Image (tube, rainbow, N blue to C red; front, side):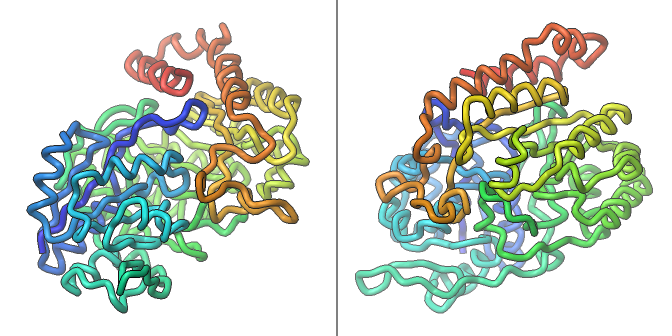
Length: 448
């Protein structure tokens, strides 16, 4: 079969609820493409997030395909999909609906609504890679295939959920379908590849959307990770790698082993990851730095211990401060992430979060409005009403909060951090000009 894979570019969205439109490799579609090849099919990828593609070109390619797959949230957006779900109507305009397959978070948590809005023939719930390969192997007939929702006899039929498989059983992503020149990450630089060493997370944070990952924490073996690193760095030409795991250092022994393998390989590249501050110590961070780690993302969320407990994060802020200090001493840059609009949060809590960010002084910081995604505990607080409705199933903030007020608070907090004279002095003194200009561009995208 000829299969067209589409990673669309979404508009910026509602003010205060915008998601940064960064062009990153659509990792799950690249894995799916390689699975399709193994099955004797011919995949083609349109990454409209990275390269401008006209609607006419996309429609023309779609009419020449046996299956047209629109991914509404590629793997780097599984946790934080776009909120303006109605834009899917315009995204699918002109595509052949009888061959249209929709995959992603939106359809996973609201399958019947998304089927109605897109008029797609088939919807894939959960991880798309194996499901899509099975669908192609069945000649595009979804009946009996786990994870499928489809039209049947005038109604919508849901097959049983698909059980997530072993990560080592997935093939290496088909990076030859895209160019390294299409992708970058401002704090790291150009020629970026995304890879993963695990999927899932055992923690139960109320705001975290894990519908795409399945209930278990699954890992990829370090030798398998290294084979992919060697391909994207040695052959594809990546200079930066972002390990897109939810919690990169959850099992320190795996992290130590991976760092040893990276150092042993002799490959020269910078990399970053995200993790909890209470799963690192100084020796581990030192080993990561020696293996090329240049940036770590830490979720801090709030300065309030009461709110920290309420949202299930259960993170000791002294551990955050310690981790940031260790990273700074080792030359590892850090990014701190905070959420505004948590249940029961007050203006004083938001001011305290901004003050904590200034005290922690990471290299980068971001303040986002907490979106109560369907399927999260934040969307269904204990004893409280569900956030959202059929008219707005992906609300931008919790009931009782004002989105415009939260957005203003987030912009004010960003300015209070980035416009400090001491921060500007430290960032521009003897540092990389291109990266600093990239950081300014990133700040502008969040503030505008």
